Length: 551
Image (cartoon, rainbow, N blue to C red; front, side, top):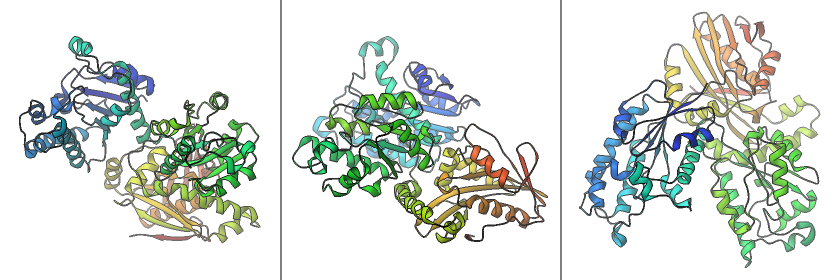
C-alpha cells in the first residue's frame, strides 16, 4: 500500500512533490496551499500518514519578525511564540503516524546584526538557536515528531540556494537543486523510521583505508598519519568510520590482498585507528569483491539492502553496483583528503533514536566471532550451546526498553511473524487494550550481552490466545532462543486460562526463516499459515537456557 505524505509550507512547495516521489517511489504526495501552515496543522486528512512541515522562522514567529527589523525582543516573547507553534504540532501529531519538521535558520541572504548576532534580545543567531532548542525541548516527549536540521543542509549545500526571481514570480524561496537535497533528507528520515537505513559498511584497504599498496610498500611504507597530508586524511577517515560504530554501524573489510599481510598491517602500524576488533568480518583474498560482500552480509546476518560499499577503485565500484543492485555504492572522491567529508554527507545511516544495543553493536559482533570460533571447535551443536552459558531475561514493555522494541518492530524482516510496524504510542495503546501483553527478550552468554533481541506479543481472548507478533534479531538465530520465546508465550497464555494457543503467519518476500521455524516448531498447521498448540500440554523448553522474568 502506498504511503501518503502531506507537505505544509509557508511558500510554494510544489517542486518538492516530484522530487519526493523520485526518492520514495510508490508514495502518494499532497501539497497544501501556499502559506497555510497553521491552518493545515488544524486539518487532519484521514488519508495522510506522514506530515512534512517546512516553515520559515520569520513567517512563523512574530517576535523574530520584529527582531529582524531591529526591534528589541525579550526572550519570554520568543519563547511564547515557539510554545504556540509547538502546541499546534503536538495536536497535529495526535492524528498522524509521523510528523517531520524542518528546523529554522536565519533567512537566506540576511546578514543579521553582525558582531551582535549572539546577543540575547538583539541577535538573530541567538534567537534562531534558542527557538530551535526550545522547540526540540517542547516536543521531546512526542514520540512521532522529528526535527530535520535545516542549518546542516544549508552548510553542506555548495550550489546557489536561492533565486530572487523565483521568489517574486512564484513565492518559491529555494532553487531546484536545494529542493532535491531537502527531498533526500525527508527520504533518509523515512528510511530510518521504517528500519531500512544502512547498517554495514564494507570498506577496501589499499588507497581507501590507508594510502599506498600494501603489497608494494609493506605495512611500514603505508601513508597513515605522520606529517604527510594524505596520511593525515586517511587517519581522519578511519576516525570517522570508528565514530559510526558508536552509533550502531558495523564495519567489514573486502580487499584484494594476502590476509596475513593485511591483518599484520592493521595490528602493527602505529597510526592505525581501526584494529581487528573494530571489524565484524573480513574477506581479504583475491576473489571477486561482489562475492566477498555476499559472504560478509551472510556472516553478519544482514541483507544486502543494509550494505554500503566504499572503494577508491571505480572498476570495483562498477562491478559491485552491477552485480549487487541492493548494495549502495556511492561515488567516491579521487582525492583522499575528501574521504571524510564524503562519508559525512551520506544520509543512509540516519536513525530516529539511538538505543543501547546500537551503541554496543560493533562490540557484539566481535563477541560473535569468538562464539563462532568456539563453535568450530565444539564436538556438536548442543555441546557448543551448553558451553556458552546462555541466559534470557524477559521484561514487559517499559520506558527503558521501548525505544529498542520499536526499533526491532520496524526493522526486523527475516524472523518476523506478522511484519507489523508500530511506533511507541501505537504499541502502548495496543497493550493497554484488552488482555494483551508484550515482552522483550534480552540474551546474554559468557562472551557478552547481545542485548534485547526478541519480542513476543500475546492477545488472550477467553479460551484462545494469539501470538500476534514474534520478532527475533537474526544475530541470535540458531541458538534455540526462538523455542524459549515461544514456550514463554504459550506458558503465559495457559496461566491466563486459555486452552488453545495459535499464531498466524503473514508471508512476505523476506520472512522465510520465520516460516521455517514454525514448520519445525511442533505446532500443528491445521490450515495454511495458521499454527496451533493445545495448551493442556507444556511447550518443551531448551534445558541449557537460564530464563528469568522481571515483574
